[in-house]
Image: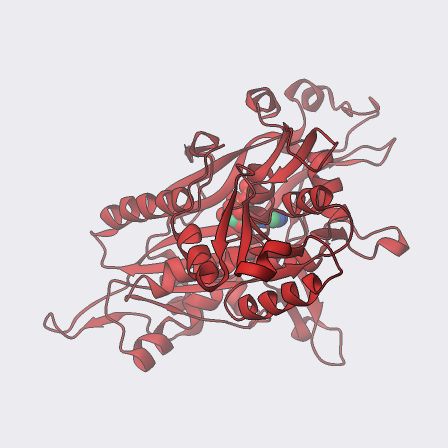
Length: 457
Ligand code: ATP
């Protein structure tokens, strides 16, 4: 895997992304004042907006644009039998080895073969322990007694909340197969190695959709969902040469899967999984039937009441991993020479306007002569429809740079002419081009620019 980092030709590095994220309030280390908590991160003012917008885009793609998909928000805490039925208690493990000398811990599959066979630590050459299985689920106790009866797991994926509600949703919403259930929510895994910023964390968010189909139509739907998920990244303007498919080989396939593909993204550290599309067969619902004693069969009323356990096609994306992908994908540095600024380089986040934390920033050229008041007035007008920012401090060129670095696609500048003829300057982040727009037409123009946005660099 590490070799693939050589393929990355973009300007981002994980150091630059981590430092920009902190400097501009996208992502902070959790509990930083106490030295930080590994595997956990806090999303700051710009980060929470970015994350929410990526989630909203996905939610719209999956529910609003599909009549046959409904939403769900299931609890994180579930009956412990759920995780026995799902196979997580038994199978959700990573093999690990420890170094007896430096105490470092590694996932066995990450240790070079020659070190494993020689039982030699890749960091200090100390002796490695035998490989042992380690369950990734966090557990705790519910209620006052800490005994086996009160054991409860903190969900490692959102999918099971969907499976246990599948009958409720059929009954309450009169869903007919094929149909899907979408959910966004937190998941927790006791990851052994949490590096690369927010790529792999112990606490993260997933965006999962489970699509219930008639057995026999599963391969067709699997291919259809592969196409749809790929198209969704294209719609969001992701660099398509940074995306590729990876089919799971027989040794990678999860115990429940008939076929599985990952969409991988070329991160600065190499190609890594972004989202998985899985044909989970009837495994989950059959297991829940067995463990709960409840009949999970679908009754096809329109087809002589035919009964069957549906197959499930799953699309499972990491929301927080998508935040990292979006930051890396948007990151750019370039030499520029625009007027009003002596600095000839800029860092710019070329977010699609649909996910940019701030859509439009309003900047008065001067604070005085009523320009600030006029700018505030225009901002209030735009606030109803757009995520706005207001900045009146410092040279205009510097203010543009600050917005470029936050990924704001549009700036509106108010100058003396604005007072006279009600026009404003609209500046585009990517091209730095500036056009004069009538105040009365500004909101409409912004809506058009957002709708027609195409990334050109
Ligand atoms: P990986 O191989 O990276 O451990 P996985 O195959 O276990 O991932 P799934 O269980 O299929 O992942 O989870 C679906 C998605 O959830 C992944 O594609 C990824 O985007 C996200 N995800 C999984 N584990 C983590 C994690 N520890 N931190 C952040 N995101 C995660």
